Amino acid sequence: MRITVETSVAAPIDQVWRAYTTPADIVKWNAASDDWHTTKATVDLREGGTFSSRMEAKDGSMGFDFAGTYTTIVEQKLIEYAFGDRRAEVEFVPGPKGVVVRVVFDGEQTHSVEQQQSGWQAILDSFARYVEAKQKTS
Image (tube, one colour):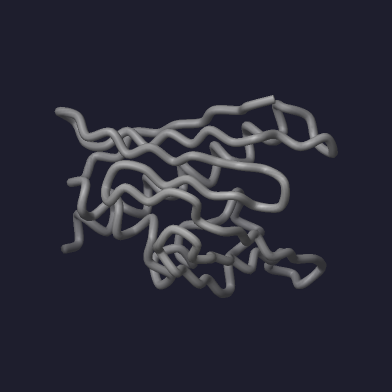
């Protein structure tokens, strides 16, 4: 089962791409809710390169590493990656009002489709808010 989430970011493609692929930015936006955060991120942005984000509950009660391997990189257009036995594609589509960021990923069996979709959507919405706020201050 494939699940799709997307958001529109009112910022230029180079800023959107950079914020999505830079560890210093990732730790600022990569959380599905206010009681979680990403404490560390690594990115080796090339085909065959790896990435990892350490996601933890702010109260320290739990955490996990979201990690995988990049399979396709098309600068400012597409990132494809594998994580475990699952795959995801991230498309960056510039338009008149900014950039649409669309993520399509393989769902898993533990959580409902709705839970997975809402969690990934919340992270993407956090990403859009972060990039737009950063653009206003630069």
